[in-house]
Length: 137
Image (cartoon, rainbow, N blue to C red; front, side):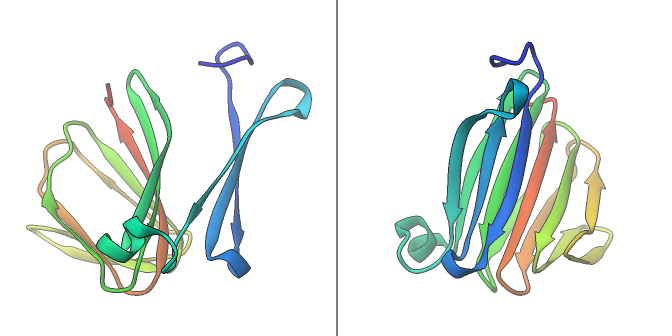
């Protein structure tokens, strides 16, 4: 898992001027191990083509974390996850839909979903979300 004996600390910070979110993976004693940035905006080809950008922060047996930036109106069409998940809105707002309900989530709110349930997500404004996937291989 890394140099800290199976423990990793990640610090996520917004950078409004760059339309970006950065994170630092912090090592033992507070030393920065890795720094990275996910950017929205027209300069990113993925953003221009799909209205979204994503990066996997960690993928371990049984756990995955994905940081996503979604442009206003971007829709992730209906799909299922093999395991349970959470979607935590860090900024902006999204609508999370299942067959039975639709929930609007704002910054600081999260939703929990059991495995194998059809769902879709739509960004009501530019949004940053943290997706946690349990049971990820």
